[in-house]
Image 1 (cartoon, each protein chain N blue to C red):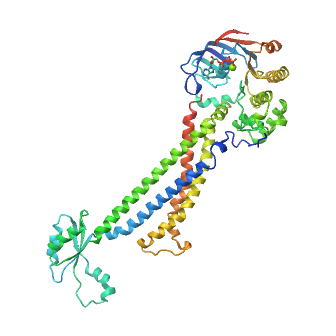
Image 2: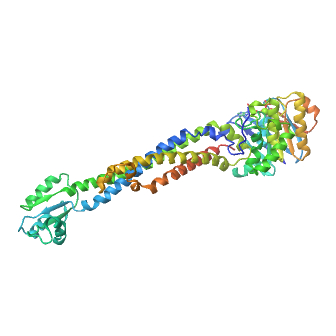
Length: 226
Length: 290
Ligand SMILES: Nc1ncnc2c1ncn2[C@@H]1O[C@H](COP(=O)(O)OP(=O)(O)OP(=O)(O)O)[C@@H](O)[C@H]1O
Ligand SMILES: [Mg+2]
């Protein structure tokens, strides 16, 4: 479950956190039920990535309450957040793969952070890489992959721990239509497995192809939900 | 491009940014300095211990034959520099002189007065002169004053060596801090990603700390081993001062005299400084992340 109540966000604080800059999100309130699939729509600069950042605990709100998977951020201790982050899968707009690690190790990272046994890591990573069609590239460096392949690695890393919440920021931004459909079917599969999924995009054709409830942002405000 | 699988050992790529060259080399040179300081402190302590006995009696006054010792004692005790004046024990004197005079000396032994000084005189020769005037015909021996001076010097050398040791530890902390900060800057992105994947501060700080402790510990071990022959050489130079003889061959150097216990502590101490400094630096830095 994800709940936002009168959330405001300013950048410019230490480490990109809440600070004194202009408010990029203003009075945002909504609730996502567990296991739902939502589009997050809006023009460039509307605050989609910022809203997702709040959802996966990369920033804290400047005001209002954010509740993620039953934890209220306003009262949560900082030490409680790592465990919560491990239940959230994130596909970043710019992938954020570790360039010095192989594809295998990149995808394995969430499992290792969670302290899983190496035998299980190997099995799970191999399975996920097969799922996204990249077993053959397991030992390649991220830089040696095409944009679409890197996108699929990012998705594999996001879902390998079977998160309760999956947020994807423009996961089809760099892809041709066929690749985009493939990525969408992966995300839909996760949704069908019971994961709460939020996908930010400005590709309206894709939204038309996969109809689902949508959060619409404009200039930092939520203009429609549903 | 293909990459080897890491089995999760080094997700931050620290082998690259905390390389096995610079930090160990710095740690080695600092351990070398620390070893020199340690040996200096130990050597000064040894010399001080040896001289302490000699310095207890600063001056000896040998009375002319037939002179009244009690008058001389009273005159000497009245001098402001003199802390204590007492007659040397005749039996002890006889024992001291036995090699030259035999079991039953034919000549009567001179009376000798031993003086402890309240404080070291600025000019021992002048004091000796004034004593000779106070006790006519007496011979004054002032070598004890010089021994006391050397003792004070050895004591301050010991203090300086310990201060140098502290200074080296401080510099080591600063060096590790700089290296760790550079490592953070180089891996800022990877740290962010690991943090967002749910790694705890302890997790990330621990990776840096273990790497730094390993590098610094190994470097310090190398530096300490390199210092050992140098120290043995010094100990050899000091041997005659401590009542020994200089060695002619390497294996005859006074290896046993090196402060091995303290030296053995250097690498673990260096590793501990590295570990702790990295932990503190990382944890302070990580607090800026949400
Ligand atoms: N780290 C940051 N520091 C300061 N300002 C930021 C930061 N990230 C985003 N912003 C600002 O916040 C506003 C919203 O940005 P955001 O990235 O959330 O938009 P978006 O809807 O994701 O846009 P796009 O569709 O182009 O990805 C923008 O005005 C942007 O300049
Ligand atoms: Mg964005």
